[in-house]
Length: 322
Length: 277
Image 1 (spheres, rainbow over the protein chains, first blue to last red):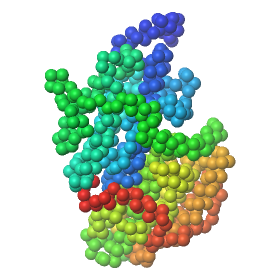
Image 2 (image 1 turned 90 degrees about the horizontal axis):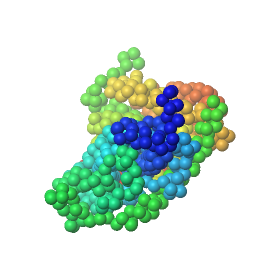
Image 3 (image 1 turned 120 degrees about the vertical axis):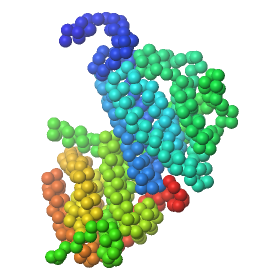
Image 4 (image 1 turned 45 degrees about the vertical axis):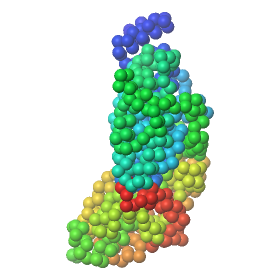
């Protein structure tokens, strides 16, 4: 109690300094702790985007859930997509706590999504026209997600770190689920192999984009703030290189190619040198102008509007029961 | 009836062709009911009224799909065919699910303007779930020991589903006038088909004679008593004797909805059923 009174007597600047000192000491911040608005806003932006990406990310795979080819695959993909929704729920809860002092709720997050003010990951704007796409999403998209999320396991914001620990554990199963689909196709008929090869080519630019544009020495103010607050610890390009080092050898080993004739590993620099995807296109995609953005957003908006009566009914029941 | 039949193993079942036939017919009803309703549940993914419900509903559809798999695998063990083929390569006329479970969730397709009806989802899941509860209880006394065993296992999971739907029914029945009206409309719609659930199909004589499950009328009365009690507690009017649809699902007569469902759920597998997937 005394501590809090003393803290309340500090000036804003002193509070900020004390906060940054906590960050520097590697302490973890809890939802009720004092935090600068900037830190709160960075977290809200990051965590709502992550949460909404999990929820929108269920939609491309949703397309394949009712069509999964065997009984075992049907069970596995149902469980997998359910997990993704569960991650979305977990993350939105974390975001809701951060939004509370601002007088905002989950409804605001949903409305921001519908108005395209809140972005979601570029990969979930893309087409998934075959069963092999469901495999590639599980294997490579989830694989990429594990890499970015693992970086944040040690994030300074404790509730996010706790959510990520659980999410990463489950994501590893998802990547295995995706890999299992991919390996079955890779060992299958010519038609199955072709289906997989096409899907890898289709997803390649989106996978490169997943980590965001390379910094080329110019770290954005956003990234700088996130690193200062120890919300994240690695740059986009560092993360992308981790991904390329892990997955390119596996893709080649299975006898598949990526749509980049000049790609090579530079031993001296210890990095993959690859052709840049179209970063202008990336901007358009995350703005909500990707190939499937409108379709998936419409699906989400429509289901939200058509079930409004249900949420109203629950609220009404809650009021009556108290 | 004094010396009740007990068939302990699949090998023993196969030795009596008419017993095996009756068992096969019953297992198809059990498998197809769960399989098709779980498929309808999977179409709801991402569209439920809120994220928490999306997770819960999806989990229940998985359980139900899991039950269907167990029944199809029992058929596979009986030598009827490969479980995946039974689920995905039969034509609609070979399916013996009740019509109630094959009805579409609403207008539109699951990925293209789905105008799905949550009230119908709740009432259908709950009314079917209550029947399933009665049926599983009856199956725990089945003369076919492996079936009695899996039924006991399924009942533990199934109890949670019923609790879930009970909360929904109670809440919607006692909330807004709009919700109440939608709920009543859904009950009326489900009631048009629900009377078929306890039907045991063309081979019912043998199915009951061999002690595989209790007779239709007994199942029906237990289920109706259970359902009436639930409706009373939720403050809902009892809709009376349930109707039966025009098509007799247990006899392989089905609507276009099932044909569409089967085409969708087997689309990938049918590319090459001999391949590994």
